[in-house]
Image (cartoon, rainbow, N blue to C red; front, top):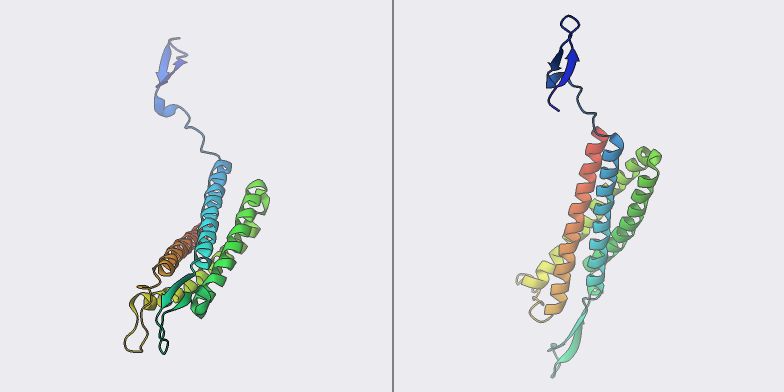
Length: 202
């Protein structure tokens, strides 16, 4: 309603009160905004868990065996390409295991904080710190594995490293998929870290 009526004590007639004199609507509840923040945090951590677990599964199932002509052997022999042939890929798999476990635990903690908000201030500091630690671990592992994957794709003629992706195409596709998922997970951790920092400032 644009205006209300107020009786004039002298004339006895009702005079309209302008709309600006009506009281403003109450501000939104802080509890509702808290629930929205916690829900966004939970959804992000569920995506983080899905990305790291999928990357881990793809990486450990990337084995491929092909008939390859080896030096000094007259006929081709079966040669396997596996992630545990490279220390960089092993480090990458271990980092994905740790990140997946952390994502699962942090998701459960975030759900618990939604149910018991009185512990939010204390546990949010721990989650923010661990998010940054996991970001460093996962980003470094992704970069290390990506460097080895690039050599597998392009090779390095100066040091005599031949490319292998022209032979082990499935192996390289799986590694590329796992690296893409890991990069996505690193971005999610970066978002969580920035979100936590902004939340503490506000």
